[in-house]
Image 1: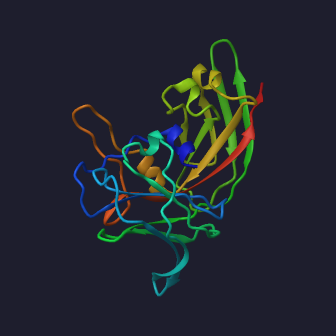
Image 2: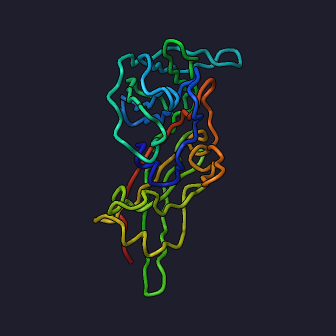
Length: 254
């Protein structure tokens, strides 16, 4: 799931160069799975540190607020994560996977803790199931147009649509073509590169994103002398807690 997001829009996270008592927490909850990949790390200067604990809570409305119930814990140091542009700034990220089925539209809180560090936490809504109804690509000598539609996903803030491709294609920049959609249909012109890089059979991937993950992926700027970090929703730390779900359909050519 994180690789899908990386190939669409994410810029490399910006974290402090000096070590302090805050943790980095990156969590894209996947309601299609019983396990949820959470990347946790000490700030970059801390090459090694105490073991991490990741806890997942479900929120229940209670008098206008939310009451949090622990539903899963991952308290073993995870294997070192394979390098990805999505989090290449992290020196030693660790993959932990709290296991729990998520309820569509429900609120969830992820906390990461380690001895001597502040507890980092963030919350999101779990996006719901949906279905891609149609994906038609009309192509002539001068242009190509994609028409697609899908059903609504509960708690989805935006949708990304993209033609599935190699990640990354031929060792190049992993960021590829995508379109951002506020709704459940799209008619958009495609660059020829997007079609040329698509895997066979050509498949449309539609990603439903929570607001927190959408904000993180679509904000921030990179620069040689000055970088602006993306919008983050982790308290007492850095990163994001969000939710995403991918549905796909083989493209029909006309």
